Length: 236
Image 1 (cartoon, one colour):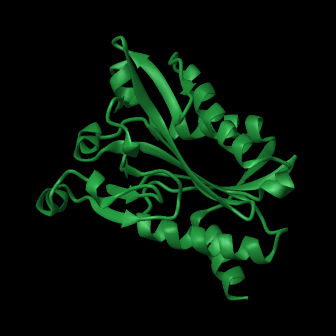
Image 2: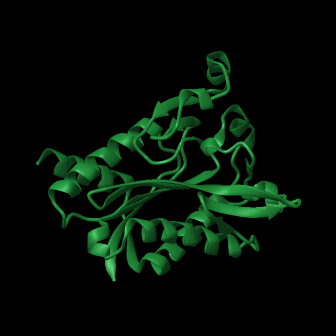
């Protein structure tokens, strides 16, 4: 099995995550044999505007965003406007699809499949809905979005990835038109199950399923090891 380095953060400032991903992408584009990475983390409260998004999809005025401590950033991933914050598992996939022998469509399918299998462990039936990337659930006779997909793939090098609402503050989603969708609302695992979950356990289950779906062996390295590795190769 091909190796993939695993890096776990408790809370990573969003701007720093963009800087790290940009550096890894540049390294991987210049060296097609460079290592693959999976970053698992949570973010500070932030609204991100993807390629198809608009500032108009953020419904809250500046004073509300400031009061709630929510940052706003434009990013180069696919999708529209979404929210990241504590209690949400974010997975960033820094992979070379050519070496993995997979297409962009199959890559997205595999990300969704990890989430479907993960939710099943908690007796939540997640499913795909055509035309709406992500993973959905039925709750109180309605369709809800529990996980979002917002990856980027350029020159077969991937970045960004997915976000699963675990114990997320869902009130913040009311301040945006999430992913450009007005007819459906997002939901968290905590809301669905009626109790909070241990997010480190979610991390562990996610990582095991990643190995199964992507057929890669994860090798965990520390945050310092990862960031030193990136800086060393970015400057060389």
